[in-house]
Image 1 (cartoon, rainbow, N blue to C red):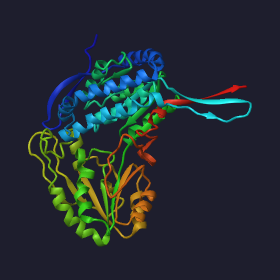
Image 2: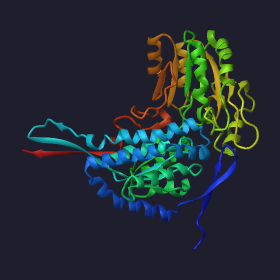
Image 3: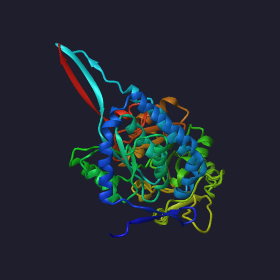
Image 4: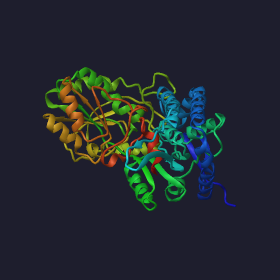
Length: 454
């Protein structure tokens, strides 16, 4: 029998190996999917209140392990410890929020002639969740919690680079009393485990967060079986700053809207559009804000930005700086680890790669605009449409521009984070479907209509 394939997990802050993780084969993936299907009828049939109680128990166990999970993510993903605590807490909060869903998956009674018409939301079966490396815990929670609440069983493929917290969370589910095979985490390669989620007929839905390129392949693969799919893909979001805005507040907050998680965030406001009369003043205010970002050991409570996930990712981001005008940079540690300083570049060509492509690193491009129509034109001149911000003291303008920008999640005078109780998703090539919010469990169900003749 050939040796089992493994992957060496590396700490981004040091570049040193952490542990070896065994990778699932196709046969092991099939066995896990089949076991999840066998566990589905009993999980589906569990009384809604009992399923809700288990989800709340799972949340409580996660809460008891917040520090452990955070410390694991600091080492595995290079996230700052403050962010990692929030991320573990987000898993807990999603479980608690969707624990309310089993008893509230209401159907409708629709008036008809000659009888009674009823609708029901029924779970799909086995749901496959493919989790990216940039936010391993929250995105696991965003898919897992509503899918389980709706009565599905779940198989999860964590990213090869960052599997450790997902593996631990699966253990915590068992500690909380979850039946075996209701939630299974399968570390493995995308072309093996992820591909099998797409092709296996017992997997009834796939949720994927990652690159638009891979998302298109998953969507095409799911089409073979008309398999349900939710996609959360790339972004190239704009932070639009009008001359009448509170420029000090806009400049102080702008670095954190793009450099959080070292820019490895599909919601990163990686394009800053500034109305021309305020352009020079904004750059003057931006410089100390960029210099003030604390890029230090992510285990330090004062850290505000950690390293990039890998040497390959750091090198990819650096290539975007070739031939561009760098306006300012922050600081970062020397030596080991995949570090890169926060970087601001000036852009004047809307066709340049630095302006059009998702860099996925701590780089932001700044460009002036002339008026409201020009700002909207520049913001919408992209294949993506995930997020964005508008800074202005004119509330009417703020609402007009937020409605005009083709993106799924807009903030006015803030860089609002994703909230688990509001819907999240993108326009255009930023994705398909919505996650989170009160309707998320219904996305893991089929709506059945039943007519009863009188």
